[in-house]
Image 1 (cartoon, helix red, strand yellow):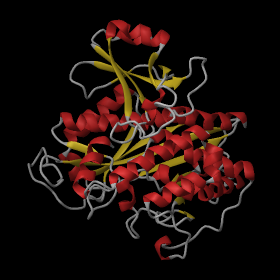
Image 2 (image 1 turned 120 degrees about the horizontal axis):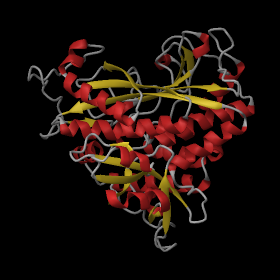
Image 3 (image 1 turned 180 degrees about the vertical axis):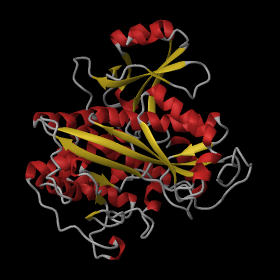
Length: 444
């Protein structure tokens, strides 16, 4: 890691940061001259910092705060090492960190450790998950009382209409996307295809499959930080809110995954379009865990605005082949690339918790030899299906009671996340729609 600073003498300052339970970066700015100390000895801040609410406040009556004396954990660099931060004016590098106890034990309330715990379950069975994400977001002019699509840098016009797969939309924002791709190269984020989506100023960028779930989660987290920061440099905002506009399409975060055995073979591939027994078991595990996972898939007050029948966000618990109305889709194509697409999550999620929840649920199903119901055909919105939790408080209750979630996450993280969401739910009731929109626009 020290080589990075030696090879990049232009770096003037360092940020050390970890993701809290809401996916917010929490950390410090340190002078370049003291970076080696952070590498060798780590940095310290309270355990409670990874369990703040969406406003950045302590959780009321948290056992991590006054009851325990608000003690420090030690945060050590992750294996990712330094990452440039191209959206900051002065040359700056991010050193991603995660939290440990002084005796070296991982802090159970750290979402990155939660994902590592799931990956270790796979390793114990000689398996490696391969993960990709599809990142949807809006570019927004938030300078007025109402959110609007920014004026095109090329024409100066605001095109307030759907532009699905419109090349002219990509051309209109070419300067921003060129800068974004350049920044992704610098940060080693595997950004692939960009398309314009159904909402005005809405886009999707696919991050390529990686046989390293921790890197895939890092990439998604870094990407959200990058898009938000770079948009501000270009004079507008970016938002991963699940549904910033009531009358336009919401933004999802679809996750694709397959699983390799110790010989590098995809265990979902049986040479046919249907896929293997292991694929069915993984599907069953994901479906069984879906109600309990909803709080991770839709973690905020406005997350539930996205789940409207007929709006390409699933509302029922079902799976199918090549069907984008279902919660789980099995894409067609080369059997060697057979995979599951999980389509429930919004763009406002914490990537570490999302990937841990989905991969953990799939492994539950594989371990149990669970069988799913038959795949559906046709429009899932017209079927009589078990429904996903429709409200935030229902999702909180389902998460608290879920046996599937208890298998995936440590008890301390479950308790901390519930406390965080219950406090957010309580104080959100005091805010009007515009105040909620402003809060989430700036934070997620």
